[in-house]
Image (cartoon, rainbow, N blue to C red; front, top):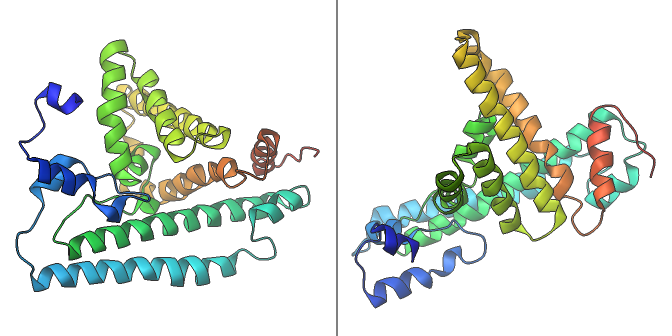
Length: 273
């Protein structure tokens, strides 16, 4: 309806709409395929390239899931490898061990989600469809802003179009628009306090980063634009997004206070159970 009012929806028939709405490869977890992209990226005839691209992408996704996600990364966890065990052992874990668990949990989350996207994109390719990409190596992003241009790109793009831009047009407040968008992204995953806290955390960090970027540009601090700084930036960005795992890994097994205990442990503070 909104795209129709904007006049941006391409012409299409009933069968075009039904084929888009019934695209089963993306039903479970995306990518979110926009109908205009769907209509513009269909192939009429099968080709060897189509099958090669699709099969390669599916194999890549299966490798991420079953080799890296289920075999290699779990070996790095050590004695504590589950969220239940992590919460139960939190009082006795060191800050380094807490950081390790959250960072590895983030990598598992990324591998699992991007693997599914690879399989969905590859399966769609076998059907003659080029659906939208969902990840662009977000683990190599050097700052929070760049990270969110590479992570779950279809959901980020959807929220930008239907949440961020409408809010900013009504309020002229970019910070309020950021919080509205990330609240939507968090609740899209699950209607729970865990994902709401996850969204608010990311919104806070992104707004702080935007404020910092404007501040240093106004003062023309060019030092922070040096290329070598992207490498420590990558480490800091992985740490930033791994902190958010402290909210989501305890969904269904922990309470808000447990999330606070995790955050405190990351800065060398041990809170009583």
